[in-house]
Amino acid sequence: MMARLLSASLLSVLAACASSLALVGRGDQGAGNRTQVSGSDSDGHPAVVELPASSSEAEAVLEVAAPSGKVVLSVSLRKIRSLMAAVAAEANSSSPLLPEERLRVLCHFKSLVDESFVVKLPHPASPHCAVVSSSGAMLNHRHGAEIDNHAVVMRFNAAPTEGYKKYVGGKTTWRWGWAAPNSGPEKKVIDENDVSESSKRNLKSAVKKLYPTQLGYNAETDALTTGFTGMIIALVNCGVVDAYEMAPSKYAENAPYNYFGHTGMKATDNTYHGLFKAEHDFWGRVASNSEAEQSEEGKTVYLGFSQLECPTQPHTLDSLE
Image (cartoon, rainbow, N blue to C red; front, side, top):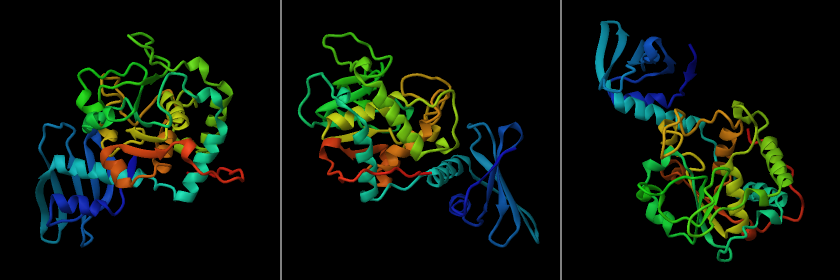
């Protein structure tokens, strides 16, 4: 049974659910997939919260051994789970880089790409671009109108808009990815064959230098995702890039892998790409907007490569782990 330490922030989680008691402890996956949070109250008495596996059960039981005997309280199951998810997301998050370090890292990635990343499809010079993830967490936001207000909107593979416009918008300027449909009234697909394989290899090497253990995440390959390469294409061609759920929001942990289908995976999981979590961390670390906006809105903001004032001296990458 794998136990995960939740940090002292759990004190506020359970205090918010049952104000007369406060627990600090750990969460375990117990028998029957019942989650237990155990530890001690503020007086040092042992205590446990057991969360039933069924989401239909509205309450959980809090038991505390006290000198006068066992105290039993009912607490909101939904509220505990919601607050525990927020604590876990906070514990897993990495702080954005300071402006100087962010500039160095982005300038290094700029130095790795060549002219093959310049989009040949017609578009304005240095446009304000939106890059729209296919993450299921997109359904937790209503960014559709904001996304459509961008000069250029990039989507991945065959991610649909019909039926999801209030969440992901309806405008599509570019599509990128191995499963992008190359059909319709006008060609919007960026040809994968146009992008240099050597530059892709250089990009992957740089990511692996930043994340030598891949944040402890392993999968079938260590190949970069379609999303990562798409973001680099956007940074090469756009003056400003607004990305949506490329760095996961606080909702992603409990969201499906994509917003239009069910693969059985979560938005934060990928069985093929071992650098998946490292990429997510990277886009959060090099974004210029606040952690609060990233977490709540799933939105990250970047200056395009053409807008960066890069130092003349080459930058050596250090691990971000």
